[in-house]
Amino acid sequence: MLETEKNKKNTYYIIGKDYSTSGFFALYVWICAQIIYAKQKGYIPVVDLKHHNNVLFKDNQKYRVNAWENFFEQPSGKTLDDIPDDANIIIAGNNIPEIEHLWPALLPLTKQDSNMPKFVDEYIKYLKFNNEIKEYLEENYQKITQNNSNILGILCRGSDYTNSKPKNHAIPPTVEEVVKKAEELFDIYKYEKIWVATEDADVYEQFKTKFKNKLIPNNQYKFKDTKTIINNIKVNSDNFFYNLSRDYLLSMYILSKCKYFIGARTSGTTGVYLLSQKYQNQEYVYLWDKGSYGKECKMKKIVQNVFSIKNEKNHKVITFMGFKIKLKQW
Image (cartoon, rainbow, N blue to C red; front, side):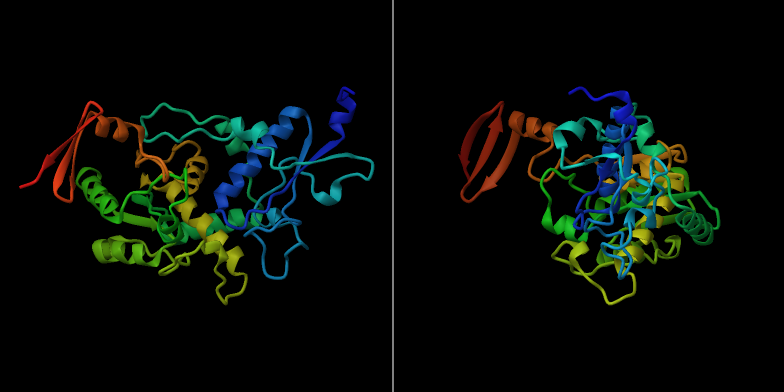
């Protein structure tokens, strides 16, 4: 039976997902794709993170409070309690084939890059924080930066990400590569301060050692020597996961206000792009493109097939135009 317009207007599309091992903006992107899908279908989207495991709950809220509303407004202004008893209800499943074309495409790698992620305006439109979170972000941004935008923002992943090397996720730059880039940019732009966003204590210490007083203190909780997914680590602290998510969001918010921004291609970078409304606040942007874990960067692979030299036990292997030649080492 064909769906009538009347039925569509009374159809609520309930969006929820168990997402305890992924980050804040990875969760947002998945949910927002579902919101866009529901709107295209004429349904009323309602996000349900009450009945799904996630990292936005406060202590003792699990399966009792809609954790989405700890951070965001509902996309249509309707909560789970507002759904009429006689409403048509569709529960969103893991319908990847139907929503994958709605995910943002790869982010622009530089400020001048004209590549525009798909549906980016919708992703910005539904990034609506509740009043408590908006006040928290702006108040702490002003306190931490003193409203100084002449800052180099750096997003540098570490811990579980670099240790586990998740397949198809972007390979981040090394700390040494990021430090070198930061030094190059200082010679050009003479930025006053640096804001480093990282969840890795060891990575942060390397930046502190290198840049000293130029580094703005970032009190975001940082993990040390982690070999597992950080969302599986429980620290004995009140509202740990909620505070971790909120402070992570603040860190990305400050990055989105920085005049210069460098980093890896991660969900956090997507967050910076959306929060800055397509890098409107940035004079300079640079993202590393080192390919993905589990597959090499296409250009690197092409170059290696054209010409490369590798040292093996007692000989060298020279590759030229796809042909391999072994030369004995004397």
